[in-house]
Image (cartoon, rainbow, N blue to C red; front, side, top):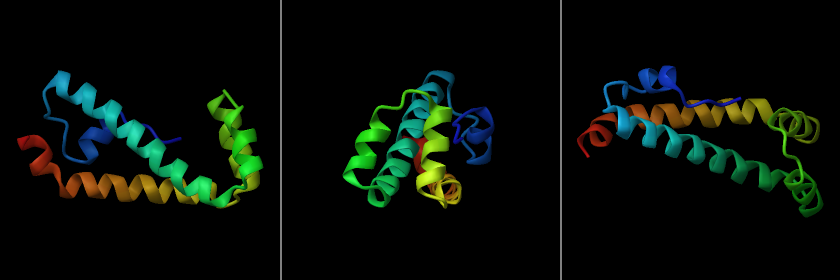
Length: 98
């Protein structure tokens, strides 16, 4: 599962961010990753499957469900996570400046 935590912040060069800003940024980054994964997954599922998926409350069950219906699910998530980390690392100076 994708997690935005202290290790993530260190990997993208944002560990030095002030504590309050870091907490807000980590929350934003987690939501952004979920949106990006959701966009790709929604393109791969039928409307019926999307409706069924929307009824799942447990993240582990959701991951298993997606893995069964989108076999490349984990690879997609890994690629989105990697791309997002690279994007943040590239924008590090701008993020810290402002």
